[in-house]
Length: 467
Image 1: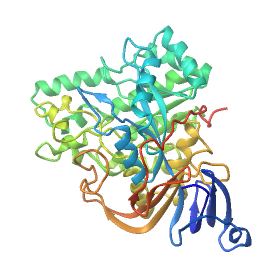
Image 2 (image 1 turned 90 degrees about the horizontal axis):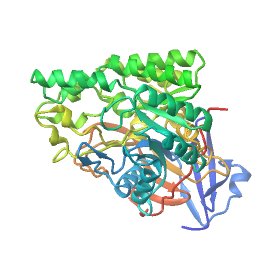
Image 3 (image 1 turned 90 degrees about the vertical axis):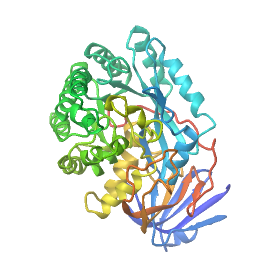
Image 4 (image 1 turned 135 degrees about the vertical axis):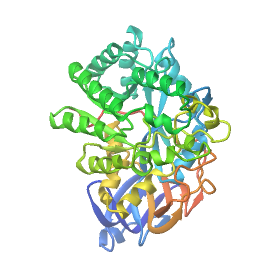
């Protein structure tokens, strides 16, 4: 589709405003907005018109935490960049930031190049990369500076997974000191992996092998302890910190305290922690393995504290940590030993709809929905206002959203390359109808009209919440 498109009659919702407006798109960007029915809006002329009467017109979602084709536990995440980005588009997400992986003994550059090779020419929507730093040394630290310069401005470290991705406190401090200088943002998987490994060993020795024990050994206190430690290391380094997939109320309390102290500390949670719980991990016949992810699902009472954190801005972002493994042949690797279940669950297609349901249920406002799912992740990772909002000059990443349509989530109808849904049978109000990526229709009235290779790599500036 070339030329100009006008979207007429919808309620345009951004993080800051709600207005009945017509939106003019030209050359892949938002050209103008004008209140519906005004002479300015009536003057918009275009080859293509989309009628959004009775619908929402929202920015495309920005999912800042996905793992397409991630190698983990002797297997690979089941979504490729092609299948995963197509599913993201179906769910109203138009930008993902995935994680390139440095393997121990290799350079950051090798890892980044490998991920570029996986993604290039295969994505239905735009994408960027964070860098997982598994091996901190003098060469790695120098490479971090170069990556920031070329638009990979965030680095993930793990206090979990000893022997795989784990960094000790000294390595973490060095990376944080470097990011304090080069403007990068450290993203932290905050769980005390050394202590967790002891508890795993002891549980297995007692014959506690079922999936539910995955949640019991990865204790909330060990998430809180690691979160506290990461915050204090960042404070010593004079660096900002972004804590990924926060699941425990005790960890939220650590973030809230740090923010009350004025520290540049940020937190992300994910739909699975807002909508699922240890009840799912305890499902019989090994069904609980479908819900094994790290940080793990928590008892239900944690959900209210996560929603509260999103309302008070102690948590700023909802990403998916989309890392799907099929139940048959992948999750089953852990039958008889929960520690061998690949960690991760699918969700890139469900996030925008689940968060709209949270609006319907009264947990958050419409504008907060757009803020935590579109605008803040774009700002946090240096893509705003190109991504995450509807304003003149922004990329025309736009979703026509029907707030009244009803759907039932199911693996039968989803587009992720995985054989189960974490939200099977859940009834939701609200559904994506049409999705534009840079002005090009990727989903058109519930039909896929996109193609692999439309999505382009998006270099990022540094975190826009920092001076």
